[in-house]
Amino acid sequence: MGDRCSTTGRQSAATSVRVRRPTVHLREQEAVSGPSNSILLVGESGVGKTHYGAQLLRRLMRVKGALRMNGAATNLEAFETALESLDEGRAAGHTARTVNVDSVWPVIDSGGRQANLVWPEYGGEQIKSVLENRRLPDAWQKRVDGADAWLLLVRLQQAIVGDDMFSKPLAALKGASVENREVHQSDQARLVELLQMLLFSYGSGTKAQRIPRLGVLLTCWDETATAQTPAEVLSTSLPLVSAFVRSNWCQPLIMGLSALERPLSPTTRDMDYASKGPEHFGYVIEANGTKSTDLTLPIHHLLDTGS
Image (cartoon, rainbow, N blue to C red):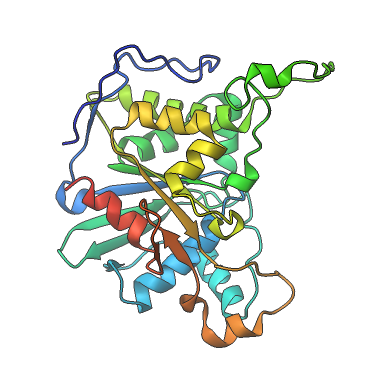
């Protein structure tokens, strides 16, 4: 079990979200429970889930790492198609947003710990619908309730942070012109609301005194060009999200990911990439800032934090 965090004197970072939070904000992290351990991968459209899935699939089946495949996976078509493109040195096309089936991968580590990786509806369009409607469909409710850990994929370059009191001191806004414009929910608030909805949904079930472990994977790390650790980058780039995560999880896993390691074109072949093979590209940045080519580590660390 994870240690409880003190909530004294702390307020929620996103007070404008309409979805009501559970009464208990911080609960014990759930322990790994044998082969039923389940890790739910969550990410909006465009964060790189398909590229990561394709590269992870190749690693699990061919490359020695912290995890390996432990049986037959389901619904691999989108990832296999992406791998065909990567084998040719091309970026995969965008996954059709109409694709809404789950892909479940059984994996195991050298110590015999097992887990199921659940990739829900590849396209990520249902996440957008969940946020717009502020409602979890029944299928998502079951996914959330059945997960022992959540891995949230976030592409920093896709999240726009506007000037506000959280990211810029009020003194810096003095003299700035004010224009009448339509108000939209910020990307930070949207991510926080997504986590709030998952927490609320999970808390409404029978396991209200526990929450799944959380991992945040910052994708397309090669675009960041920074020497900071992933946690520092998240705090700097998305301070509201970082504050919310740390106020609700005692030990969140925050890592960086570059699934491809370099930009690829969907039309022009990268011959070096094709000749070496996609399994020789891609890396993760660990919590302490070290680089590793083992793309299974984010999943493996989520198992470690629950052991």
